[in-house]
Every structure is written in structure tokens, then in C-alpha cells.
Length: 332
Image (cartoon, rainbow, N blue to C red; front, side, top):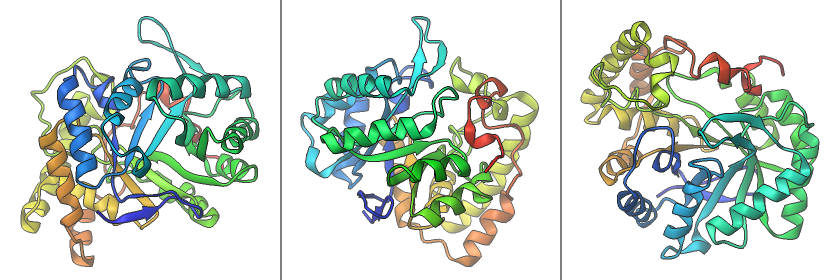
């Protein structure tokens, strides 16, 4: 698989990464054996970037990856971890904690759960409004100097916050939602990253399955999508019509809807690494096919005509969650 560099100083990772969140949380039950087989297949097929968060399943996802790593070539893999989100026993949310002392506490538990001596990219999941980003990045920089972390990353922050963070320590990448349905980063955030030599790891490239080509109005579930604005009745009809327009383009290209959506994300630049959230080997197989799909100018034009920028109905998160997202605040 093609390799891409995250930031000016690396790391070099596969052009697509595996987002492991759904194997533990947010999208309903997942099968442990199938999850482990999917991780193993991803690595066998050339994926070297594994993305997780310490709060995915309250540590479950890190332990799952740790189990997988026992039989995988650790030295060829980059493990990316988000931290800072606070949970309660009912799986609810209690804000974020990115104080320097908390950063060093969180990383200690992550290292143990993963069974590793270092984390390749470590990043706060969201901006903690009570803690200057300089303090949080400074604490991660201490971990870099101590050898427990290799690279500093960010997640869902504004251009202004990116610039403040980069003044403290070199930032490898910004993890943020970026897809055919979510393109607002192109205004300020993506240009700021490029000016500073910061890569982008793009999650949500299939908009949580909405533009996978596999979603239908009949599907129900008590997972994140039950509260996601884009999956609500009126919005869903509009958004699925966009998917059908994209399906026509995909069929003309001899590909699936998911492959076209991922290939579009891959086309955004060699500094953009899409994360695919496959939980099963068949879905991973489909996603990997995107790497073989070459989009020329005419193909890209047809894709963007089918799904114009800003065409999605509904916000990408419920308002209660958008309130915690520095990237959505429009400053910077």
C-alpha cells in the first residue's frame, strides 16, 4: 500500500488507516473474534496505522488492540490514541480533562492496556476549555522527551488552536471529520495545517455508514446514529438521495459507493490519510479496493456534481456534542 507522511517529521504510515472505535463502542455490538481477524487482515494487507481512544468502550478498545499486537509486527505499526474524554458507569459523558497531570495519568493506563512501551501518536480528543492548549501539548511534549510518545497530534480543533499548539511542539497530524458530506475544514483548518506542515487523519469518510451504500431507511439501532442529525427522518431521505446519485457515478466507474467515497478522500492530497472504520473483513476488503480506484479530473467532477459541497442535510453531531468541538466554533 502507498505510504504517506503525517507532518514534516513523520511518521510514515499507510495511505489508509484502520479506525478501531466501532469494535468497542458507539455502533452496537461487535464480535471480538471478527474484530481481531479484521485487524490482522488490515495489517497483512499493508495498513500500518491503527487508531483508537482510551475512552472507546472504557478501555476495551485499547485492550483489544493490545491483544492483536501480541501477534503483529509492532515495530512496523503506528498506534494513535486519543485521550481526555471522561465517562461514567452508565457510559455517559462528563466532559474533558487535559490538565498536564491528567495527560500523564491517562498515558500510563493506555500503555498498560495496549501492552506497549510507547504510543506513536498521542492526542487530546477535544479541546479542554479549562486548560490552555499550550499546557496540554507541553505535557505530551514531556512524554515525547521521555520516550513514552513519539509524535503529538490534535483532534477537532480550530485553525487558531492549531497555530497555538504548533508554537509549542511539532504537530504530526490533526484528526478531524472529512468526507464528501463534511468539507468545512477546507475553509480555514486544512489551509492552516498545510501552512504548518501538519497532516490530516480523516475520520468519518463514510459518514458513519450513511454514504457506504449499505444504509437504508429500514435500518434501526440504538447506537450513535439514532441521535445523529443526518440520520433523522427528513434529513435521511435527502441524504440517501445523494447516495443514490453517488451510486450512479460509482457504477460507471466500476466501483462501489464506499470505494468512491474513500477514493475521494484519498484524492484530497498526500497529506490526508483516511481512516476506515471497518469492523468486519468483508467491509475491510471493500474499503481496500478504494486504493486501486484512480480518479481523474472528470471522475472527481462527476462525484462532486452528485454530492456538492454543503449538500448534506443535518449537522454532523447533535448540538450537545458540537458545543464541545473547538473546530466548529468558527474562530481562527
